[in-house]
Image (tube, helix red, strand yellow):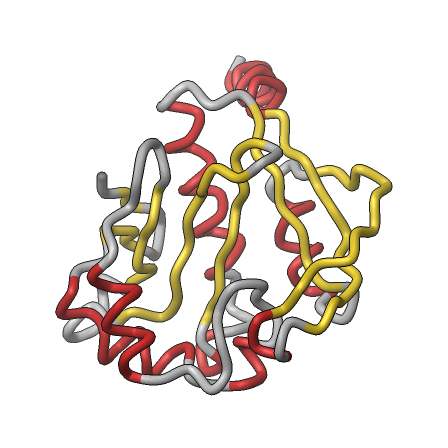
Length: 181
């Protein structure tokens, strides 16, 4: 599956993407905000990640800039099923932050999720990463009121508090329809 937004192109992650993925994510400041990525993040980790296909209804995309030469990968985004339903996760490389790319990528993935019939998507962020909460809220996520201890692989499994969110995609569709009318 592919998605074109105003400025981004979301596409599947291919095995040959490992170098760009590695260059983008092999930064402790990024990895320490992700639950599953290890630290240090190695070339072998990137190769394994890029070679692993999305399973079931999971969506796994490279976030690229199609207007730039070579359409560089600036981050990743996806939705995977976990014990509580569909979970959104993403990261944007340091040099690309502060330009609205995360907000735009989340919007694109939620549009795809809606088209695939998903009704709701969960997400969370470590309390020390409030910028991620702003991205989620801009895309219709609302706080659940839960702050959950969540393990962080990059921090050696240390448990960090994470704020939880939910997005009702049926409500977002109804709101978009009302805005179009």
